[in-house]
Length: 275
Image 1 (cartoon, rainbow, N blue to C red):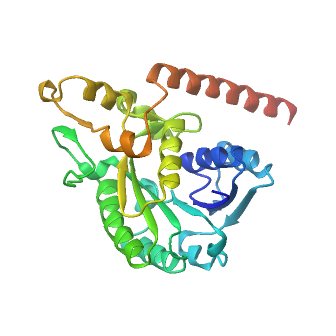
Image 2 (image 1 turned 45 degrees about the horizontal axis):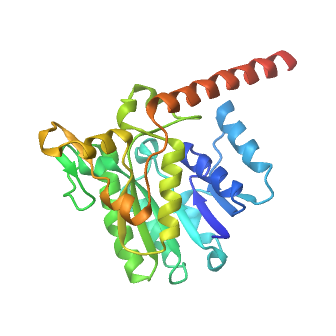
Image 3 (image 1 turned 45 degrees about the vertical axis):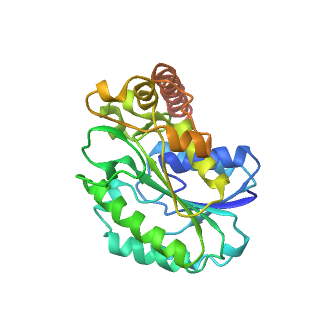
């Protein structure tokens, strides 16, 4: 990949994905809208990426995505935008209409990565594969299920190489506040999430669905699945077809996150003192 587009580029996952792409020398067309009441963290994330000459920020809302004129020069699109906060403001139909306009402008065989959620599975028992029935019981899960179905259909019609990547809860530096209330043992560290998205983009095959297992899922898969209670994600497809394996265990991930928080607090205190 030489040139990619990332929607939701200033969000948690989008920021880390852009950084990874930039570090690998890939030109990034970042798409996000700038809110007036931004936090210091959001301003800092934009500042850090803005220093890179390969980074180009387009301050657009989702409904303006289709106005980008040079899609023919883009190797891949990562659609990371639309988190659960935005779902309260936008309907599935409105987001689908926006994406439909964009997908119809894409040249054939463009790679499209749609960041979905493992919440599409809902409450199930045992080992869950990518082909498991979808029974979402949350607003986010229901939204993603509808989006998955339509995006896959549109991509096939337009010969776009779409991969849907279902991501569990993600934690790490710059994580949203609500992540602090989750069970970290079933979450994945941000670098693992980004790695999974990158691997899916490099696969260059359409009409695929992958999910990104955590170390909890890996450990369950290595035991006797029939003897376990509850549910866990199958590791087979993502490992065999993408080469994806989580790399950061919870203890290491939380240590990295806590160190980031400590350094960020020091930076904020320094800025206040010199202001």
